[in-house]
Length: 215
Image (cartoon, rainbow, N blue to C red):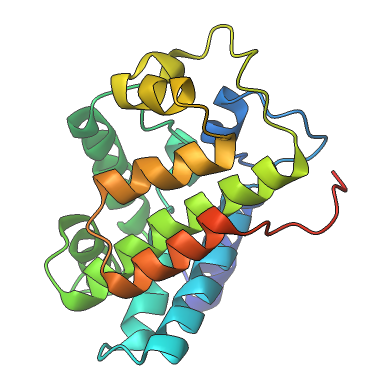
């Protein structure tokens, strides 16, 4: 296969993510004509990472972060998006790693550079990987808050949504939190946000992010 063909075929592969809707939003039965695709998530988290880097002056290799985030969902071109609550973390990891390995056989450099970046992100072995991971989680929270501010999430009508039975989620719902609030508070209690990520997360928690309710 020529270099040119590899470039085009990899582009077409990644292009599939424009059509893969984030499963977590489907699970929550959001009343919205159009939901976020995985490709849109990748774009958003890269730009969130850029702004966190600029505003808080992190001592990291931002080019490496951007590349990690560009590829961190590539496995979903094969296995689709997976709701993290619908299977064990171990099974989800196995499926994703297998998919990424098989995809990159055709496209990676001889030293496996892209797959190494993917695994570094997954294993959180560097400050860049940890930063990228936190950006990935915060982006999901911010999108949830945007949807919540639109009023398209009804926590009283979640028939068939097993996420509401997760003890910590049930507690947050029973405590009267809105959709956006429960997503943010869940992440604050689950992920090692540093003071900067926590500050941005708390701002989103206490402010209306969407000024209009256009869906």
